[in-house]
Structure formats: C-alpha cells, structure tokens
Amino acid sequence: MTNKPNGSESNDSAKFFALFWGIIHFLFGNSKDYYGKHYATEEVKKSASQTCGVVTISNVIDGVSVFPLLSIGFGGNVVLASILSILLTIVSNYLGAVAARRKKGWSSSSLRFLVAINIIMSATALVSPELMLNDSGIAEVRADELVKIQGDKIKNITPSPAAQKQLSEAESKCQKLSKEIQQFAKGSVQRGDIYIQMNGEYKDKNRDWSEVPVSQQPWCVRSKTLSASVGEISRKAQAEWEEREARIAAASSAVIGLKTVLPELYDQHFDESGKVRSGTEEARIAIEITYSKLMKGELMQLGFSLFIFSVSVVTSAASVYLVVNHNKREDVQMSFDEQLSILEEEYQQGNMED
Image (spheres, rainbow, N blue to C red):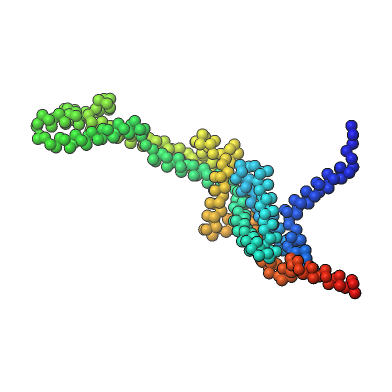
C-alpha cells in the first residue's frame, strides 16, 4: 500500500480551508467588499468595517428568525430550511455590499432589493416565535376550526340524489294536479279522479299513511311524507352533532375533545403528540394569531415575538442607514476610481526618480 504524498495532503488541506473561508466570507461578509482597491484611507476602511458588521448582524438575525417558518414550510426538512436560510443571508450580505459601493444603477437597485428583503424578513421574525413556542395554541385554533367546519357541514346536509329526485317528482306532480282540479266543477267525475290521485279516497282523509309504501301513496301525501323524511334526517343529524359538540366543549381542550369524540378527524389533521400535521396550516394560523394580536393592540401578549421583531427592525434600519451613508461618502467613490490609482503610481515613480 502506498502512502499519499505530503504535497497532495497539503493541497487538499489548502482547498478545504479555501472553501471554508469562502463560505465564511459570503455568510458573514467582508468589509473589503465595501470599498475599492485603488484608493482606500483608514477612514474608508473604518466606515466599511462598521457598515459590513451591522449589515451582517442584521442579516444573520433575519436568517435565523426565518428558519422556523422555512422548516415548517418544507415539512420539517431541517437541512433544506438551513440551506435556504444561509442562502438568504448570503444574498442579503451581497446586496448590502453592492448597495454600499456607489456604482451607478447597481447600487440603487441593490438598495431597493435590500430594503424589500429586510421588510419581508422582519415581518417573518414577528411570526417565527409563535411557530416555535406556541404549538398548543396553534393546535387549539385548528381544532376549533375543524369543529366549526364539521358543524357547517351538518347544517348544510342534503338528502341523497335519489331521495331528492323522488321529492321533486312528488312535489311537481302534486302542484300540477292541484292546478288541474280547479278546472272541473265540484262533484264531477274528473274532479273526483284527480282528488284520488292527489290525496286518495275521501274516506282515507285521516288515514295514517306511514305503514303504506311511499311508492303507493297518493302524490300530495307522498310529497308530505318525503319532505318529512328529509327533514327528519336533517334534524336527527343536527341533534347528534349538537350532542357531540357539547362533549367536545366539555373536554379540557378542543384538541382533546376532538381526539375523544371524532378520532378519525383528529388523526387526519394531528399527529400523535397533538401537533398540526400540515405545515401550511400551522404557518397560516401562526400568522393569523400574530397579526390579530397586533391589530387589536395586544402587544403584551406578543411577548418574545415582539422582542425578536423589534431587534430585526432596529438592526435592519441601522444597516440600511449605514449603507446609504457609506454610499454617499466621496472618499468611498474615490476608492473605485482607477484613474486616481494611476495618478498615485505616477506620483510615487516621480518621487523615486528624484
């Protein structure tokens, strides 16, 4: 077995560290990206270092705060969420650096994108703590929603297509016969025949038709029977639901009530620990809870969410402010002036010749 040459090991180590520092450079920014290489005073370097530091801190905070939302959005895929969080941080750092360079066109466009990303990330920072710390509250809201949806379904219950067809046919026939009977005089044979089709024999006026098959009942009697049957189905379903709903309400929480009374519905929407299965629904509810509290002025209930949001807003505002100020400095613009670098070299050469 041959040993790997030391030179090859050194090259591999060098490549690894080059890649590592490259990632660190993109993730945490580099102050050298904030000024040109042609003319950089200590003041320019100091301004670049401060601006880069604040921009990086702001973007890292935003990248971390957006992670929970991304993780849930990707179905708990932590690796994918981490990669996207890092990419967002890198992109934000790059935009900050480009916006600070004061290059025509690119600078102003990058600044607009940087402001847009900061606004989106800060808004996300307000929601993320709710996702991380309020699983039970989100589950409770979802359980209440499911109970309401189920109740609405019961209220809007409709008969089967076959039963509806039978009822429509009976009602239509009864109405038609009711109009026809008006065309004949009382006591006429024709009127008597139509009456029998509508209501049966006159002697059966007070008859209990419940024991007679529906298909053999007179049309108007059949219409009432079918209508009552459909109404009874609806009333029975409503009564059963009200009993279930009362049992759910009596439970210690909506989640537990749903699990006890409607286990199939519970298993469809919640996992074994009582957490909402759908990441999309979980994110939606977290956003609704957060902004509902915000709109109602319930700032004290936002707690940690408000703290993270405030930190994100302050650092984002500071980073944009420093980028704009750095961008406006004349000495920063001079650092990108290649002609100035040429003049400086000519001046130094002239001094050496003297």
